[in-house]
Length: 339
Image (cartoon, rainbow, N blue to C red):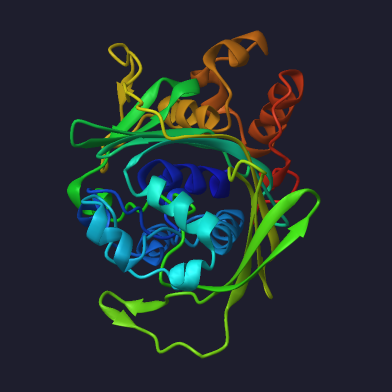
């Protein structure tokens, strides 16, 4: 279980990596202007599965800046140029991006890829405030931005942490809009949808402020599927090493939303550098899996008892609790032997 615990701790303190793929271009962009690679570097102690998750999201979530002409008309829009806007090319993608750039949206859907399997996508944003549910590779974490503070919350464990300024500065919440890395290819009709296709040129930073020179050849492709009303329904991205990643949207709304924290008055705050008790480490670890105190007690154990078990016994008890409660943790490698 040591490898799983290392991943859990990394997720709690560096959970931003799961939502760090591209820039959001609301009026708060300057507060979150750093690359996803920074968040990945800060979590180098995570398990291999976590690294795959980072790569998979990076392949699926190159995102969002509006074109230069749009920025002149809309105060909150980005000043970056969207190649697709020329000659009305990529008009649907451009319109979606302009709406995203207002900074108010509510997005839900399902992401499917070779590395992550089927993963929920939940993202609500109101300028500087946001709520994101991170559920990937068997993990369950929520992130809130409220009143200038960023919270990482593990509801099943009733634990939370508040990100410090340096970690918060690394946050880039993908909004799936177009940016200057997208080059319009063409429009087609498929399965009743209007499909706008783009070549994607990834922006790679070797270190802070040092951008690697890019090839003229695209790094991948992205197809945006719109229904007859011009509403975005699906995005399919493809990269040679990552394969296809599909995001199917069940909700895309630009109505005003209010972001509020849950009642955490009785919850435990976990601060970076804190030395947790063995029982609290188990509590947090199981909570990230979606396992609650009630589930542990139903299995005839407690966090304190769990912490006293050897690793093999802990592994078997986690698997039993997960199976009894319909929790899928297969991707966490609990069937692998510990080194």
